[in-house]
Length: 439
RNA sequence: GGAGAGGUGGCCGAGUGGCCGAAGGCAGCAGUUUGCUAAACUGCCGUAGGGGGAAACUUCUACCGAGGGUUCAAAUCCCUCCCUCUCCGCCA
Image (cartoon, rainbow, N blue to C red; front, side, top):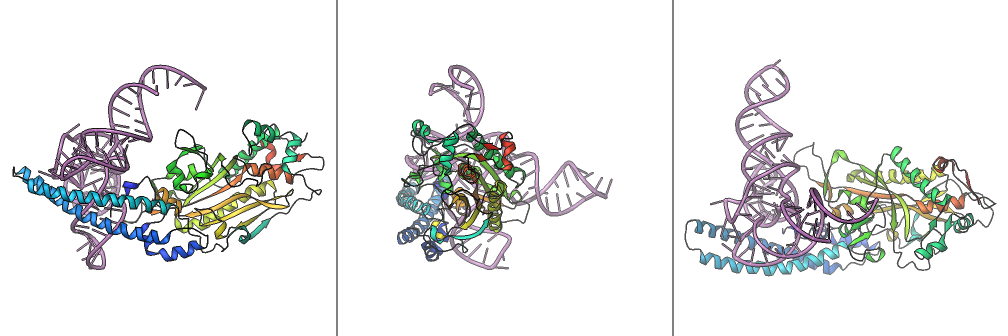
């Protein structure tokens, strides 16, 4: 096989052999999520690559032998011109084939990187959110005067949210938090991080908020979704859309010791999203912003444990809402509603009284080996039997939680008839004892 | 931003065109010796992929930061990029 490190900067999602051997099965399974992949072209390219690769290897073997001959002759002070001429023409043939091969590899890699992950067998079929399956609810909606006020109205009236000035200094889809609002946001971040680090066993990380192209490719945002990202003009840096990107990439190109797994990280970061294509949707309030805060949970496990870990991780995110006494439900996303890289996703949806609806506040996914292959994150049991294969880890992550949406849920669910908002018990000591936000 | 020095196996470190997948050392593994530990000695000891073999193994290809180029032949020469370090400037 030709050395794949030649194209190492372009990671590979599907192992090409696995893809070739299981193309029809993969094709069928991906049909569930409506993936548009040029399968026949892909198949042809894989075959071409295989043929050309073996040609190159054969020629190169000849060339190596010939070169050794030249070396021997030269050392013996004998003329070597004939061999050199012969080798030159082999060299030229190799170059020609390699040029062709390079083109094929580039196309193949690019196509490959655009194939989404396979849904897990337990994922329900379906095209869109209508086919998602509710699996549990916790708590119950608060009893409120009808109609309940929206968090936007409440926040502006309380003087803790300012969308007009945010529009002035930045634009649409930004928010300014002031006074008790800013402090509540900060209290939530601390509450979440503290719970995850002290009760759930996560290690806190504060990563860069700008990352390079390789990192974005590894977790699956690139190459397909560049239009969703903010990118710097003069440098090839992107603003992170989620802490998943820098934190998962902590271990890119690493081989982990099996005894170190599972590894669990939690990170607070702001998140930046272009929200291209969502014009006119959720234009009011804190729901959909270009910049928002999030506390993320990230885990690396051996493959056998990743689904167990997904349940754990989801429960950890739920614990935040339970601590705040916010009613929510958990749904399993159907194949068509899942993100590109996910094999299985649970969304946690919090109750929003003003909308009389559940709204996503966390998304917890198992990516299985998808990101690990793109990022080349493996593990090995170094203490164990000899010759043990290094294999790809499974990666997972989930919001634990989206902070702005949590603040929004608190404002709405804890609103009082006079327009003030009670602070949930658990947050009060993070708020310096404040029990209620009022005008 | 300016000037310079570097990136070689788990680690240290040699290697300026051929017999180099890479000396030597450390660490690790197996063994000999041994009252135990230690020391000494012997052997093994990178990764990925293809072919052959039931297997131990064997053979081919690639890999000395990444990518391209020169050459019959590149760790070694040339170009581009990335990263690290030192000095200067600037800054929190």
